[in-house]
Image: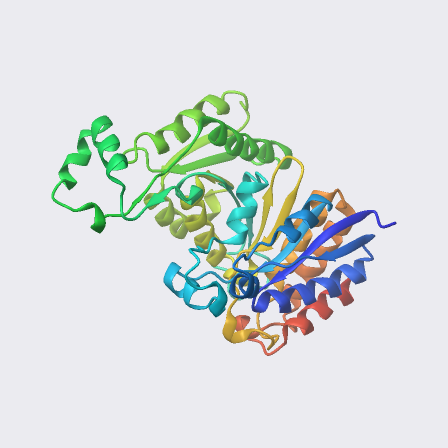
Length: 372
């Protein structure tokens, strides 16, 4: 019996291509694992009305972690239009399966390392090594939205917050509302994870990125919680910055920052900026981590126009695989994989189109495997 059972979820588009690349490397590493294929993605939305079938959730319950490729998501009307005829008009609503997994499995921490490996011509500056900790289950991504706004919701909001009155001349049928929900527990968990990581890896600062001067209650809760938690980590500095200023400072002085922690939406935005500093989404890995389970995924999308062409950069997927190995406690294999990735990047012979090369997705994976 294998030491690990890993849910294998290629998903959509180039997710299939980069997962094939990951398998080449995992086989070379001889990880003692059984890979259990699980259905997820647009195909299952179109023909079943559910991009995250119950059978897949059952597989996740019986595995140690999951490796995930990419997902296709489309707006409400487009999603309904692509359902098979038998499912149209049934009131089905598309919801991103990866967001559902984060919420249903309480994968509360989204960790996104952004590291500039020497030799990458797309690095903004060599030496960048930033890790973004993004709260993963709350905030605007909680999905508490209304359109149109029910009258009772509108009146309840106006009763408790007079600022709602300025919208009185707008009919409910012409208004949409999303609730930004942050809890003290959610704030405490993500900020603690960021400080614990900084402590474990010897990093000297944690920067909390919010907008408390305008979004006073939800961002304010994050800032107040960060100040409270920072007292337990006297060797690590707490820096505070607004999301808009952070974007500017990351472009100006990226080497000043080490660990960033923020809420869900801001984390989604700022991690893409950090990814571009180290070569773009082709180098952007991530882990959705809970107390007892984790789903690892590159942060790029499904890029349907490239599906099956083995054109896209697999580095994000391979760096994600490295994160999975680290989480499983396979430190030697994780270290070996990172060294191999770094060597291939530095050598520059195996590069996909986005890095100015002509190698295929699988060519790069084979180059990394040969270094192992």
